[in-house]
Length: 304
Image (cartoon, rainbow, N blue to C red; front, side, top):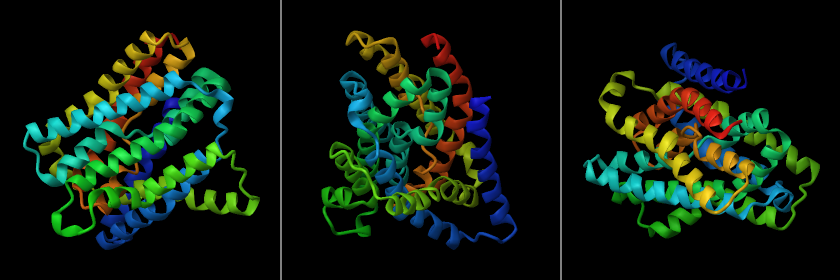
């Protein structure tokens, strides 16, 4: 039931976005504006409040942090190499890589870890994510910026990556968590209200921008992204955690964090950075559907 509760809102909001576009409630221009709002305001607020307010010392696991970030970096390199090897168009290379490395941790994985491993599992996942989420965002934005059209900006790529609002929000959240930040009530309420827009806004825009006629032509990159994100990354993570002598809980949390389907915000980020939104949206759809089977499989293998 927990898995179903995590899946139904995703597909319901995507379907509402499709319907809104079909019936003229959400135009293409409006969907672009919604994506920009999510990418530049809602997501940075989400990272600041979710990461910044997490107590680092409550469930600190160097092994889980090292392995999840390391495997994510490996997936980034693999995505870039495969995209180049296959000769994907420039607008798809960064999107392909982002789909393979960036997981839907907060909205999808956290509830499942809580249901399966209780409060101890959730605390470990939250603290590990204070480093993993900034790393994922930094790598995803770097991949997208690397293949952004040359005329889009004259600013050096390193500056563009570090100045990206999502990267700023994630790194600021990490710095605040290290400083034991306790936000004022009014500030926390304001950030949470803005952060609450990220999930529905990203999914509605994704639905409004989906071009179903192109999905069949994207089967090869979708299959590769799904294999990397849902199978290869968690398998490599489990092996490395076992080599490091991690506890069963550390192994389980690390594997499930790495096995998360592609983040729903990937479409908004791709749109904001001139990537292929059809591929970005398809990665979210495909990995989310397939994660029903892969999550159950990983939990069974882990003995949860």
